[in-house]
Image (tube, rainbow over all chains, first blue to last red; front, side):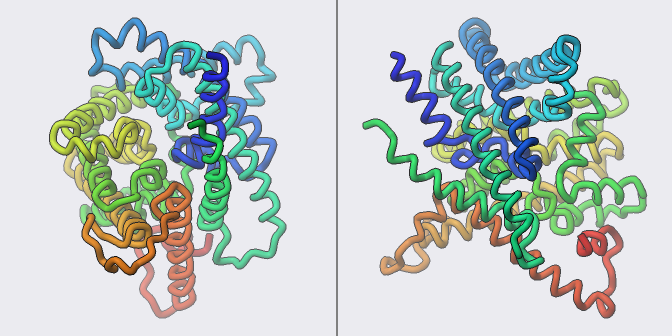
Length: 192
Length: 244
C-alpha cells in the first residue's frame, strides 16, 4: 500500500510531470519562470493549493457527486475558486508575511489548469483520499521542479549571447521542449 | 472567486494581450476589425500565447486538433453570446464567477455532445475537454470584450477569435501528424518508406513545434519591419509589437 502511494507520488512528479508531460499549468511556467526565487514561491503556492484541492475533490467525489455526476465540472470549479479565496483571506489574516511572499500568485492559481486538471485526473483514475494526497504532492513537487529548472536555464540564457530573433517566447518553448525530452527518460522508471 | 483587479491582472499578464485592450479602449474598431483581429493579427495562440494547454496537449493528430478547436469555438461563441446578453444583469463584483459558471455550462454541453457523437475522439481528448473551462483565452475574451460590447460585436469577436484558435490548432496538428506519423487526417502522405519522427507526436514535439513556429513568425516580422517605410502601417498596435 505504502509503496503504491510512493509510486503515485514519483509518477506524478517525474514520469507524468504535469507541466512537461501533460501540459498543465503552462501559464505560470511561461509567465513567472524568469527568476529562481519567484519560481520557488510560485511552486510553494501551487503545492499548497493542489493539496487542498485534492482533499476537497476526494470529499466531493465521495459524498456529493454520486448523486449528480453531471455537476462535476461546475462544482469543482466553483469550490476550488471559493476555496482559494478563503485560503487567501485566512493567510492574509494569520500570516501577513507569508501573504506578501505569495502575493499575487494565490489568486492567479485559481485559473491555473493544473488545479482543475488534478481534480479531474484524480476522479478519472478513481483515487481515494490518501492516493489523492500523494498524487497532489507529487504533482506539486513536479511543477516546482519544472519551474525551478526552467528559471535556472532562463537566468543563464539572460547572460548568453543569443541572436535577437530567438529571444522571447520562441526560445522559452524550445527550452521547454528539451526539458520535456529529458524528462521522457524517466519513463523507464515505470513499474511493470 | 478572484476579485476584479486579479482578473484584469490576469489578462494584462498574458504577453501581447495589452495591445488588444488598448485597441478596445480606443473604441474605434469596425466590425470587420473585430472579426479579423482575432483570426490573425492577435491570434490567441500564436500571438497572445493564450490557451496553450490544449494547443500543445491534443495537437498530435489533425482530427484531435480539429475536434478540440471546434469544441473551444462552440464554448467561446456560446459564452460570449450569453455574457454579452446578460452583461447589464451581472453585478460587477461577481462577474468573473458568473463568467466561469456560464463557460462551465457550455463545456459540459460540449463534453456530453462529443461523447455521444464521436466517442473515440472524446476518449483521445480525455480530460482536456473539461479543461476548456480554464482556457484563459475564453475568460479573457469575456472580460475584455463581451462584457462591454453589444451582442453582435461580441459574436463577431468570438467567431474571429475562435477561428484563429482553430487555425492555430490545425496548423500545429498538421505539422505534428505529418512529421510524426507521415499522414494527414489518417491518410498516408509520404508512403511506407517514410521513417516517422516519433518525437513530434510525443509531448516534447508540442513544445518544439510551437517554438519553431514562433521563431519563424519572429523572423518574418523582423523582415517586414525592416521595410516599414515602404509598407502601409496597420491601424492598430502592430508597430509597437514589432519594436518589442
